[in-house]
Image 1 (cartoon, rainbow, N blue to C red):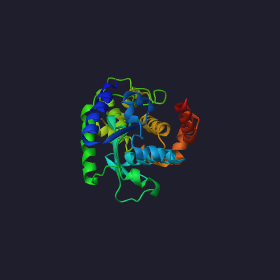
Image 2: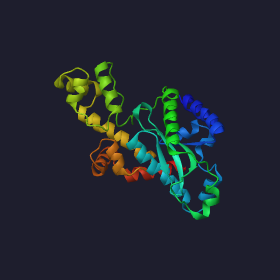
Image 3: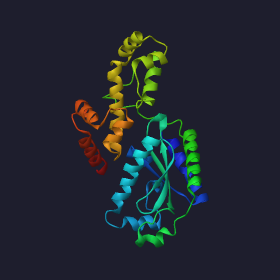
Image 4: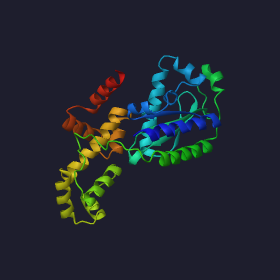
Length: 281
């Protein structure tokens, strides 16, 4: 299933050789790291990064920059952007949204940031970093985004937590179309009347059919969908809980905490802590 991801990652090696640009993946699901070359999972392939991470506490700051700050921006922007690092360098971040669901970021860099001073003790290593104008970096980001869209289009991932939201067991194309649209636009304001109009049904007929075919009432199914999306981000990132609630269509962090207690019997903070323990084993 993940062959396209491996092939895409290998194609980046040509860009590395041609342009002297280094690439690194950060996935929401860490198991995907097994599907790309090991060299594209390491952030310390430059003398600058290696020396920086030898300093106590710096590695934690770097991870926070990538898995918290960058992930949060990716979820909001949904397009390539530039990440100005705390150490005076610059990276291009290209979010990956297969089937309109956030899966991670491809980083390109590291580049010297002409607008930042950085740490004085690392000036020698920083001076060796390549320099690229920001408009050119963003143009590269759009090129990589297009490559992803073409080469990774065939990838399929589990749609949601099957315990929380089982697959819709129906052959009714109208309900399947509604469910597909809701998965792709769960952060938007979705109403039953809007979805009924979209699939050409009256409101009462749509509500009856949806409840019958999806096995959950419309509002319950939509809520479960949003909680399932939030669960992926809570477990796989350091994005603030308030941001996760916002991008998943949940009113606020308090409401998300209430829903997590209801469906999982745990708070988002507890679930994130347990997920970190699992990844360390």
